Length: 262
Length: 259
Image 1 (cartoon, rainbow over the protein chains, first blue to last red):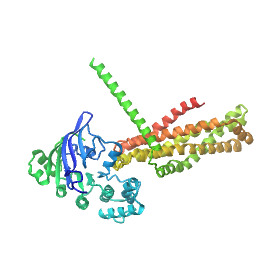
Image 2: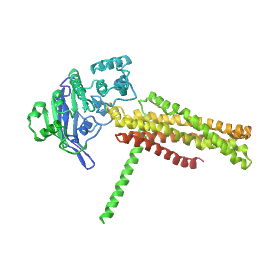
Image 3: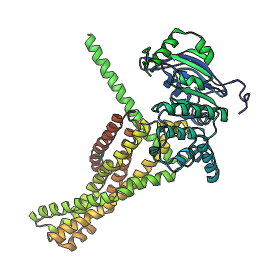
Image 4: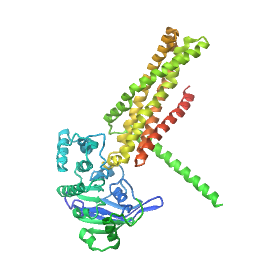
């Protein structure tokens, strides 16, 4: 994972990304870079478009206009096998974990390797055990997702997202549905894993401001645009009124600044 | 004037929506069929679905087939006796089963048993982002989830229909001959003389088409379920209702073509 392999210091670059659903313009020109080897956390009021934005980054949705460049490849016009090749550069942790409930943990984590590589059974088993150890799930190979707690499901899903050794990790609200003590341990795990594998991480989160502790950079999304982005220190020092109102609303338990849904 | 324009606009929007849905419906089928003939093949997945859709439905089909045959034996005997032609009982029971009731009832029973489960499974996979997870892993979800089920339907439906037919004919024999006293030799000889390859082929064609329709509709409904609990339950209901209706409608058209 050489820093200069694709020329730039950014793993992902997004330019003037726009997307509308019917009459509603959810992404209104998003511009942001994701520097390699850092955790960038996207925060914002619910409905600001952050989930829709993430679904463009992981190529589940296509923009109406604008550009997304992942590891030097403009993905906005790609299709077929070229698109699949880009997909293999990143791992995705879904909000619900999205583990296959018909399979035990081992098969879930092994799934991308079984389906997409020609590794032998032994190699796959070794990789799966190593990855389960990294997320603290040793000995859980035979359990089904329904037998795991919410936090353990997230850990297993993280193992699956990283099993094919991607350079980029995307996480959609990984702490949804967890109690406060577990939130801290998942955050710590995300940070530890990111550093261990040197990942570029894009994290959508509503755990404001706790999530700032594990973030290198913050992007504040508001009304379909990146209103603020930069290092944690830069963003908190910006004294942006909307951002501060958002933080205050979060602290008082209200989700303020009603905006477009998405 | 405005009212007229608004009504026409609404009608137009409705028609466009309808065409889009119909288009998606067919693209879904063609994608699934495309991946049946294009590698990589996943025989393991299809075999698993044959077990779930086919093998695990066998007992139900035996049960329903037996009782259908018994009813046909009873009703057929009482009707034919009025015309003093009890000897034709075997032919009546067998032709009714092989040409009509075998494929139709098998399809309806599998739609209710396996089709509903399939719609619910795919629907909850959609709701919990498991289908998105496949896409993100660069695995085509239609290839992985739908094509194996369509293959399984095309294989299981004719086989289950054949089982239904045979057990139904036996059920008719037990009631018509053993219980009511129709002549046993003419029951079996009548079938041998009056049923030809075309009758059997008609039943097999129907079973194949119904297998495709039931899998297609149930997978489509589950795959496109709204991402919530009510979405999954609605998808399941719609899958069973729509596939049952389509089976009966198609049955009429196929009968009129194949007769």
